[in-house]
Amino acid sequence: MKLTLDPMPVLRQAKADEVTMRFNQMAAARTHTDQAYAQKRAWAEVCDARLQPEAELRGMTVLELAAAILAKPDTVAARELQRVQLLRRIAASTTPAELNAIAVSDI
Image (cartoon, rainbow, N blue to C red):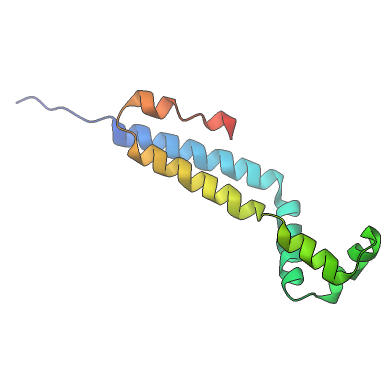
């Protein structure tokens, strides 16, 4: 009886762990910025008066600043979408070469 083991599940998991680690490093480096953007986005959705100081700094009204904030892409959501897309590519990989072609360093 010959036993053949498929290395792909372990290789896929290692690549997925690498992706998650890289995204965690990126998120840690941007914690304050991500939190500030999320807070401003929440305030912009209701035109909260707490946007007033920044609006004055930028020479605009709170309504104009709120519109500008909401027009920007949600960087945290975009980063998470990128992470999930990479994880899907990893899950679909059938050979070590396909996994190696997923360049985590380019994230």
